[in-house]
Length: 239
Length: 348
Image (cartoon, rainbow over all chains, first blue to last red; front, top):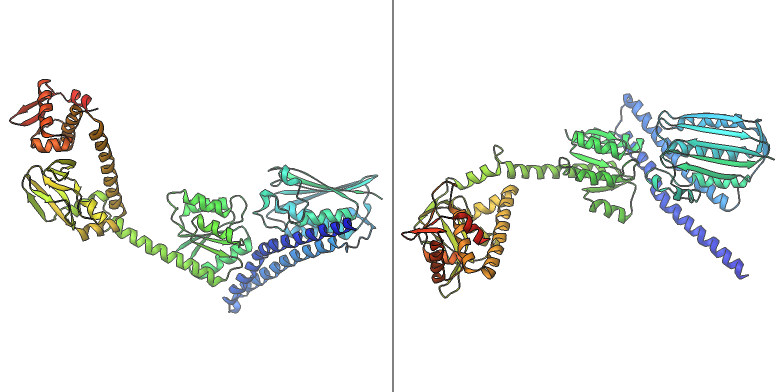
């Protein structure tokens, strides 16, 4: 009985901490897109004439993409809530891994910084038995991180291997890297590495990738060196 | 057109902010990280910098810190534009020397008001400084002082005539056009100690004026002298409008304090021979104009004793000793230094 109480107390405290970390993250991360929306709205007002239509469109576009950014942050947090409550459904199906990865790459290509490129290679047979939605979400989070922490001309390397016992997905960048001390914590929710605090982000992407991997019995491994780059690889058992 | 440097890593915010500023007729330069921003600040010397705090490469605090280390741009107006809204972040920014702190999401009017306010204040300060330091025709401090002292009413004082006495209220400062002046303090029993000597080109009487107290010493002409009189209002105006001149007077004050400390030490601990040798050398240092000029000390034994800080009888006895040792020559009461090196050796 007492052990049970103790456990729910610990859980409650953890949730409380999570909430307060969300509030402080959100209060900061929301401000940038909100600034963009507010300033674009102000500028829209300055262009009352029809010939200014291209400028108007540009600002409407900025407002739309800022709202998208806000929605992403909210969704990340909602997902986190669902994970905590065990409400994420996992549906294992057999699907073509290289095809799905290529499709995802095509989708996220436009969100890369500068002239960044993605290189993709696959080894082994194409069919795997995992949850494609969760895997896609994981991949998007990992690529978004790789892009964010890499130079404008960086190359992001994605590799998938279908082995006899394991399926591996790895995303490698040549960006700012993660210090050894930070590597111990980067999977925690809201955690930001010391060299990343000045770069926008919620500290949720990798955490969610980790939790989703767990749901599919995968384990995440981080290999990184400061200034050299980071490789995140996830190994799933091949059923 | 005023030049504003905008340092912001988020492209949307950077473009929008630049657009808002440009619509208000500012010339806007943009940088996408702190390092680039700092380089551009040094190169383009903007009138004002708007800077984000959280940026890769070099954060906003780092930019402000580095800018203040740069002589040419350290006075640039600096506004933080940031998502960091904690009171402690705000204090940190302001304590580092930012002029303003605008938090995101910001209202365009709010930002424009902050920019306008800072720029107007900078203009105001700049004008003040320009009229103060350079004045008409960009004169140097030395020229200003020359203009300031030339063409003044000057009074002639006969030898031994008092210029001002201890306890008088100051309403002017004095500038020695020609002659020798001593400042001294009496102890009430007719004993006096010379605290300072002035010669051509020296100001005096300013300490009491600055302090706004009655004079603490008496000045007297050591020989026939010509003294320019500068009214208090002119002096106060010069000091308050001109940082360079004010600094010059601060240096004079500091130098005078250091000299007095040395004098105090000498009075307390030096032997009679040392005091007299020192007094002779001080007179020479103060009043010999060029090294080759034949130099005689022809002030009264009373005055010399007061400069040395000793009794007249002791002074006369020591002078006689020096004469016997061929350190000095005495003709008709005037003293000539014969053996400079040995005298210096004695004094040190």
